[in-house]
Amino acid sequence: MYLGLDLGTSSLKALLIDDSQRILGSASAPLTVERLHPGWSEQDPDSWIAATRAALAELAKFHAAELAKVRGIGLSGHMHGATTIDRAGKVIRPCILWNDTRSFKEAAELDADPQFRRLTGNIVFPGFTAPKLKWMAANEPEAFARVAKVLLPKDYLRLWLTGEAISEMSDSAGTSWLDVGKRAWDDGLLSATGLDRSQMPALVEGTERAGSLRADVAAELGLPTGIPIAGGAGDNAASACGMGTVGDNHAFASLGTSGVLFAANNRYLPNPDSAVHAFCHALPGTWHQMGVILSATDSLNWLSGVTSTQPAVLTSELGETLEAPGSVLFLPYLSGERTPHNDASIRGAFAGLGHESDRVALTRAVVEGVSFAFRDSLAALAQAGTSLTRVTAIGGGSRSRYWLEALATVLNLPVDIPEGGDFGAAFGAARLGLIAAEHADPLSVCTQPATESTILPNRDLAPAFDEAYGRYRSLYPALKGAMS
Image 1 (cartoon, one colour):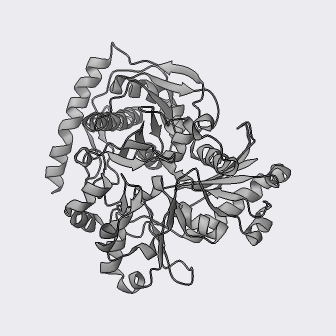
Image 2 (cartoon, one colour):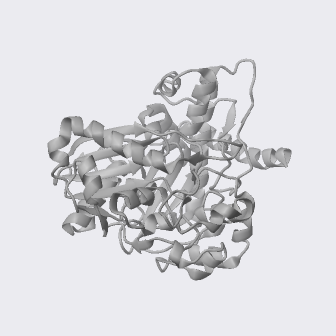
Image 3 (cartoon, rainbow, N blue to C red):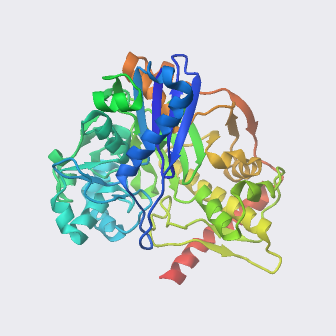
């Protein structure tokens, strides 16, 4: 048996598989985000431990015997979060999350230093970890002075599980402290934020052993003592392992809270000017590129809140047959945007509203606007040297047939729907736990699921969507000018 733990922004998920990778059960526990000021997003790291306990307690109600036979654990988690630990191993302040944009000035200062793009292969985005620590140094100097370790969220869970401060390449590539080509911390990048290597966790590959389960935690959770914890992966790389997106140019489109267009690469292909992320993959000797949209299904969730209508009801009102774009356009910049704009201060907008613009029109505009944002990422990937021929759809938004029809047409790519099953980050983490425990061949474990069906672009509607995309593209500079 093998266990995957995926620390998401809104929940912690535990998933149990057997040695044939059959899913035996899963459970989750909710998490909350604190937003004390505009642009801020924080979580209490100890809530992650409480959620892990709760999810495993729920899983144990039906699978206690199987949990007692677990041979390896893999970890996945939301990336970039700054979890600061003092010398006593205590959390210094709430974790500043990936979608927190308070450090946009510090990010710009670091990005102006040419060593960052040259060594990391990426723009220093406000959501990355390094500018958050620079913000702490300027705004919370007493807290910054206490920092003994900076851990990414899933690696704080590892600290609790194993007592060791260890990370892996895919997650660490999103800190702005890793030389992504060499897969190692860089002293110059750390020094630029007032830190040194002693404050970083040790590094392993995602498929390698990264600590063993402590006896007291094992007894509490009903797991065997001393079982290996895999290095694991950041959430997107873990999802790629779950989807088998590990071969060159294999790609998926994740319609989750954020939106990700992810392409695996067998070589390092940095192009920071495109605002594409170039990160290490969880598997040794592999990398990946991705365009990132900060508010994908989060845009639909926002509309759900203001209309007091469940997201599934909103999308069901669209039906399953794609229609031509409506007159209303939506820019999904609710928390700023990464690819292609690298703009933390921009905010979203509806344009073209009229008396006839009802709830369905607004939902259609949100679906189309997020799809257009994916097209921006597709263009950025092409600029960075990766041309895609098809994508696999994952994430909560992929349950909407209408949304997938729109996405296929906007991208002008076939969109594959995987055969029923859970192939997300928790499953990928469990696969990494299996690999680390059994020293298995990563490529033989991280296989692709069968395709249930494929959605092809609607050629009849493609010209109308191309025209609407052109109008969508013209709105960003106008909105930027109006907000300056």
